[in-house]
Every structure is written in C-alpha cells, then in structure tokens.
Length: 289
Length: 257
Image (cartoon, rainbow over all chains, first blue to last red; front, side, top):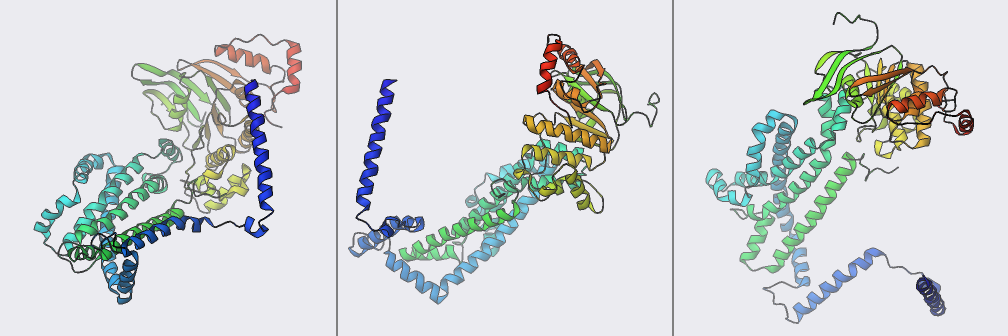
C-alpha cells in the first residue's frame, strides 16, 4: 500500500517538472510555430520519398545496375513517354476490356450457380459438388488444355478469366444465402411472405454483403489473370507489355506494369467501397445517425 | 373437426401433441382463447410454452390433435427480427399486399409513437424502438390473434413499463386475442385476463385475473395471486402480510395509467 502511494507521488512530481520545462522552452518559440501541425498526409509521404531518393542516389552511383532495376527518374521518364505517345492507354484499354468481359461472364455464372444451389436443396445436391471440384483446379493448369480446345485466340483468354472469377463469387454468395439468420426467415414466414417475396426481400438483400466479398476477390483475380493470359499470342495489353519488357530487359517498363497493377488495385477497392456504401447503406458501419 | 363449432373461439386446441423423439413437449393440450382475450402463458424452461407458441404461429407442426387458429395472426418475438436492410416503415408493411401501404405504415408507427423514425434503419433504433416497430408490424395486419414470445424480456425495466402500457392500449384499440409467453409472473398478472401455467406440456393450472384494470403490483389481491403462481412454478413465497403489502404500495409497479 505504502509503496503504491510513494510511486504515484513521485510520478506526479515528474509530470510537474516536465510541464514547467515545456513552458520554459516555449517562451523562446513564437506562437505560430508552436501551434504548427504538419498534416498527417504529408507526414505519411516522408518515408516513401526518402526511400525513392535513396534508390535514385544508389542508381546514380551505380550501386544498383539498370538490369536489376531502373532508376526512379528513368521509370518516371519512360512512364511519361508512354502516356504521351498513347501506348500505355492503348494497352490499358485492351486489358480493361478483357478483364471486364471475363469478369462479367464469370460473376454472372457464379451468381446464377450460387442462386441455384443456395435457394434449392435439389440444386445444391446436383450442382454444388461439381462446383467444389472445379474450384480447386488452378486456372494456370487449364492453360494448355484451353489452348488445345479453343486455340490461342481471344476466346481462350476470356475463358481463363471466367474460370478464375466464377468461384469466389459462387462460394461467397452461396455461403451468404445459407448463413442468413433463420430468425429473419421465420419472421418473414409469420408475415406471410411468398417464396418469391422471401427471396427478393430477405434472402437476396441479406446475402449482398457476402456477394461483395466475392466480387472483390473476383475483380482482383480478373486483373491478375491478365498477367499470364496476355502472354499467349498477344500484341496488346498490360500482360503483353510486361512479358515484352522482360524479353528486352526493360526493367523500367516492368516496374511501370507493377505500378499499374497496384494503382488498379486501389481503384478497384475504391469502386467496390463506393458500391457497398450505396447497396449496404443499412449496415451499422455505414449508418450515420 | 366436427367437435369444434365455427365462429367460436379464434384459438381452439384439442388434445394437441408435439413430440421430439420420445419426449412429448406438448402432451394432450386443450386450450381455447376467446376473441379479444388476453392470455398469459407461464412455465419453467422446457415446459413447452415456446413450442406451443411456435405451433400457433405456424412455425412448427403438431404431431396429433386439432389445432385451429385464425389466418390473420401476428407474432412478436424476444428479438425484434426486423430486416436490417429495410427502413422502419418498409419493415412494417413487409408482406402486406394493399394499396397505399405507406400510409398504413405511417399510421401504425404513429400508434406506437415512432412517427419520427419512419425512415430509420433498424441498426439505428434502440431496443425499445425496434420492439415497437415489430409490434407495429404485427398490428398493421389487424390480427385476430397476436402472439407475443417474451417480447419485453430483453428490454430495460423502464422501457418495459412503457411497453406494458403501450401493449394494453393497443390491445384495447385493436382487440385481438393475445397469447403472451413470459417468465415474469408480475408481467403476466399485470397484463392478462387469464394466466395459464404450463408444466410437462400440459396445463397445470389456470387463473382468471379479475383485478380491475389499471393494475399495479400493490393492488389488493395482487400479491396473493403472485404467491399462488410462484408456488405453482416451484418458488415458495411467504404469504404476504398486510403490513408488507402496505409498504409495497409506495413502490408498486403500474401496468398502465
């Protein structure tokens, strides 16, 4: 007991000493500097900028050879040149079309399959086990087979993106449908909802959050799939750009491709967040009272 | 079916049996509820009261016997069970196929004192408010039978007193037959015309509560009924002395003003 009181008293003395020290120093500094607060955003930028500068310096001094990785200034210059010439835009546009086409087909198949298996017992018996088997096959392993079946044209590329994007949506939406609070289903039954009304007013809105989780995965996969899909007989697209750069040891272009992927990742996440904010406005995390 | 005349009691149960495996949860139960009657169902856990209410709500089937309930019935559960993705007024009219539904929703929510929360999502409602929306959702269907499954159990004491008053007010206005499942003996006596004690899936005892309305726990005869019901439920209480009753009068609970 006595020890405790002693501790607290010495602590408060320390605190008082520090306070007076602060006041002493502050007399020498003008008010506006003392109240100056650097915005957090700027503070966050400090360490990346320092890293970039170190990288640039190391490249200039020849510590990092160009075949390992290009200097930031060179990457910036190449990026600018590619934007100006419209080359980057062209490749992006081609990739975007492929990704979106594959994604929309894949998500549609996933949603339809999940509705069939989620909403009917018979559907689950018939469709779920093949889906579970197919989902474990890596899309990469399908490349040779798809090339044999569909050739090396556009169809194979889209088909590979479709196989990658179907299953995340399928699995999540199926789980979402099955995990709806049975108490809500009961309540709906006492309210006399028909089967169709139950699906429309209870099951679909209730499984929407899970759908968005799946959509997020699928969107990411649709872009990742481009990396290998666009190495098959292509002359355009981000994946082509990367593999072409590899062949010519253009590390600057490879880094640009990586940058594009990360920026796209951010954009996709932002897009989904915006969609969720509208579609899931009722969720406690979004509700502002 | 011939033994039950139509247009009599809205709820008629004859020799109803419901069993899970070998265990008979409801065992040859007979029960009538008159139009507009307020019945409270008491019983220890596992006495079959929730099973009975679920059968009446159509959420559970019975294994034998006759069960007759009005088509127009509504249930309010311990949790509000509102659809989180629908605003309060949309929850109220969910499943209702009538024109001008919004006006009805507004009317129903006004009745429960929530006219200002029409557009609120359930996540933003307090426990009491959500339960009142659930009540409005039940009553907007003009039920002949209102089933209440411990609807006040999860509410704080003050909110519960307000809800008791509200439920009596609404019951008088809409005059449905009410079956209230509860653990709270005081609540049963405060609200009901008749208290049924369920034990082993059968009616162990039923008491008509003739206390004049606007009841409170300090009312003459209240403590005697309470002691009787508690002893039926296996809780022994000392017979209330007149002095103790007088002292209780200053702290008594009111059902409604």
